[in-house]
Image 1 (cartoon, rainbow, N blue to C red):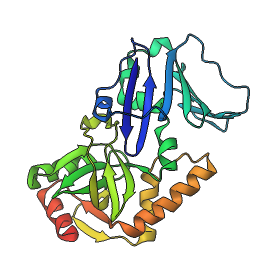
Image 2 (tube, rainbow, N blue to C red):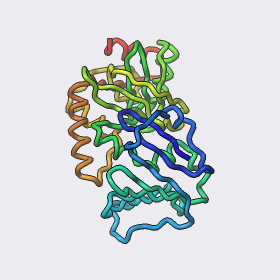
Image 3 (cartoon, one colour):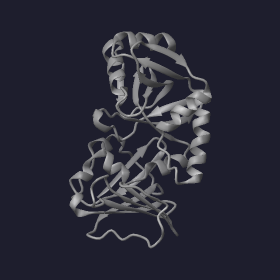
Image 4 (cartoon, helix red, strand yellow):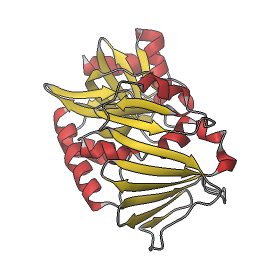
Length: 280
């Protein structure tokens, strides 16, 4: 079975087994794609064959190899002894993904399926960054609420929906890229536990770094302050020096161009009003 998709500026083709469940969110990114688009070939096998090279990275959920043809990744979940897939780049436009049969149903999860494609590797080449955030659209512009997990991104997004009629485009991620005139937020096929995923492109009004507080306060950060906070919420392959260097350069440009605010906030309409005064 063939599926063609495009995420931001990245077009790709998928060759997948008929019995493989695909995430519902993926359908939002289906497109007519040219034959020279990046090609992922997915298939099931009872054995995941790994290269005989020393790993660059070994984590409970990820082992990374450098091979003659490109990067390889053994993918798993922390605390689960059996991996679910092995990803191997074959050349500059082709990757093969071998899937463990016992994981067939779980592969329909948007988070697990997206991990099979190493999308951030394709995006950094196109000067795109993946930001962990709640992506909210308000007055035709994007407000990106970012912070470590469980800090309140979804809560603040919901407050803006309730009190200002804003729309949440994605509850967990946004793809950031440059367009003539500034930076834009784009849809991403992974939305975490929020369940909110749309494929929309919006100019960015601001990035808002959150923390919980007893009183509401907002201030604009300097580019250096912003960089320290924003970089920690980007998807960066830190084992790859070229990737890290490019992500650093792009993040510096982002934080020097797009307003970044710090918001200490409560769960209240006053938190919305406080940030609104700072932004507008």
